[in-house]
Length: 259
Image (cartoon, rainbow, N blue to C red; front, side, top):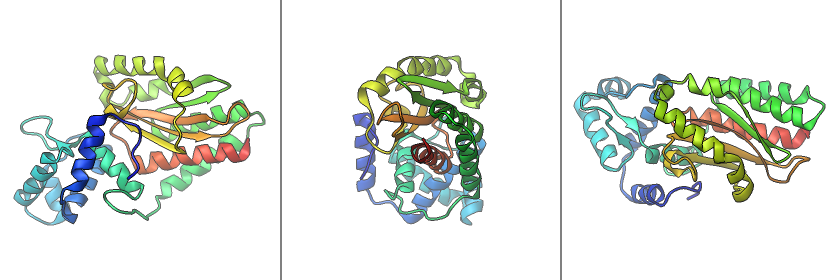
C-alpha cells in the first residue's frame, strides 16, 4: 500500500484500519461523508446519509459509530454530524489511487475543462518561468487553494488571499500555522526532495506545520532549472481530492512536456 510520507501515528492507524473488516456500505458511507463535507464544509448528519442510502437514520448512526471507532470520522460537537479525520482522508485518497476502498474509474468533466485551462496558460508562454507561473495561477483559479512551484531554486506562491477566504481560516490560529508552514516549505522541498511523481501530505502527515490542518498536494517534474522541480497546491484538508490531485498531476506532466 502506497502512503505519502507522514507521521507514524497516522500510518499506524491506517494500517490498523485496513486490517479490520469493514463492510461495503461502511466504505460507501465514508466515501460520501468525505465528498459531502468537501462540498458543504458542514458536518454530515445521519438523516442526510439515510436519504442517500435509503435506510433508516438509526442504521446510518450505527455504521457511523463503526467508522468513528476505527478513527476514520469524528463528531466535532455533541449534536453535530460527522467529519472525516486525517486517517479518513488518507483512506479515501488511497482509494482514489487504487487502495483501501478499491478502484475508481469515472472521469470528471470538470477535470477535462480544468486540464484545458492549464494547457492554455502554459502553451501561451515562451519562457519556462512564465509557463510555470501560468500553471500555478491556473491551479489557484481552479481549486481556490494556494498555488506553489519551485522556479530556479525559489518558491513561487500565488493565491494566498483565495486560500484564506475558505471557511477553515476564520480561525487566526490556523492562519498563523499555515504561515509558519510556508516559511519553511522552500528549504524543506530543497532538502527532502519528495520522490513520488505525485505527493499528498494530509494534515498531521505534513513533515512541517503538522498542526496547520492543511493538505499539500505536489507533483514533481523536470524543468530547465532542475530535475526535481515541484508544482502543487496547499489547502484545507477538506478538499475535492479526486479533482485537485488530477489537476496537479496534469500540471506537472504538461510542464514537463512543454518546457
